[in-house]
Image 1 (cartoon, rainbow, N blue to C red):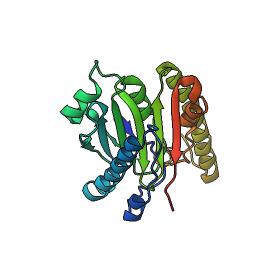
Image 2 (cartoon, rainbow, N blue to C red):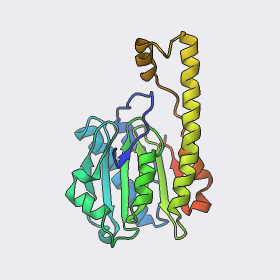
Image 3 (spheres, rainbow, N blue to C red):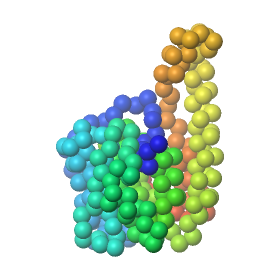
Length: 227
């Protein structure tokens, strides 16, 4: 499983356009003009890197807040994510047991989804991660930031509760399609067809996290592309 990945949906991958790069929002993540402007710059660099070097697939930038003027480390992923173990420097930065809230993780989501279960797990598991952004290929930006009262167990709990609801909704949608197409779940060929079915993206996991953000001890924000 990838450390960072987007939720798999029936939606196709969005090709990044220069127009999208030029109009991504400047999200207020630090309440500091210099830092917010640097984040904005790196978000543009992230989409540019994905567009020019990875066919609009997923890439990640890892910014060390102990050295804010240094360019973030980067990793090139695949269509649905990447694993930090593929980069020695990034792996060492994120998994440093002595680092606390010193890393900003930026990555793009080619299918324009919200934070995935893998994203949430990495955010809760690694004490070094202070801030995470998912920059969608359509220019939408999602952000989560740890606060002083951050409770990783509460975050995982609320995400899993919401994700379970998403799973039930998806299963019900699949069963409606099976019934409509009159497929036989005992037939091997029909089971292959069912396995390939896609559903809507429900995102109840991250929506439940956002709903309980204050209790969890996070700040959650979403900004859409500027016109």
